[in-house]
Amino acid sequence: MYSIKEAAIADTDAIISIATETYWSVYGPILTEEQINYMLGTIYSVETISGQIENNVQSFLLLLEDEEPVAFAAYSPRAENPDIYKLHKLYCLPKTQGKGYGKVLLNAVADKVKEAGKNTLDLNVNRYNNAKTFYEKMGFKAIYEEDIPVGDYWMNDFVMRKEL
Image: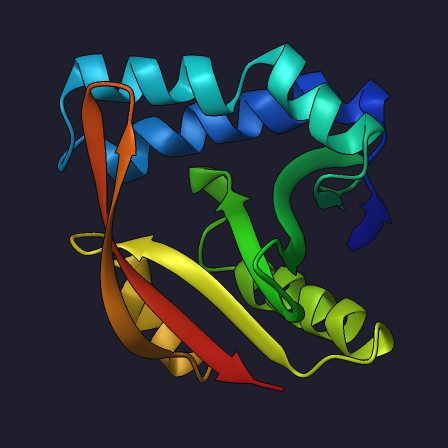
């Protein structure tokens, strides 16, 4: 049994915990330990996540399985084009993968985008991340490649898009 709720600042630790556990399983084979530690410390710090929630920089949806937080998604309008929304984060604990929670959260984000009167959803996925196949099955198409500097590191991504 699962439920979805809008995440609040009080959910920051749960979001960070899910991200940390998932990040290692997903990115361990494709990024260095130093880069993973840097990314987690930068993107998933308490200050960063709580600030994004408090200042409405990103909206977070938290999926709970039997009241335990096990997955989350974060999204917002794109800064350069608010008619297009961006899925910034989508992580499900490894123990829950295969239960359809990624699809459930992605559909919940799509519903929020449509409720906002928009119909385009973008995301970035690492070019070596197996999640690209999942996103393709969900109707996303790679529209271009993008290399984003993060500190001394690079995120080598596909930008994918779905018309809702």
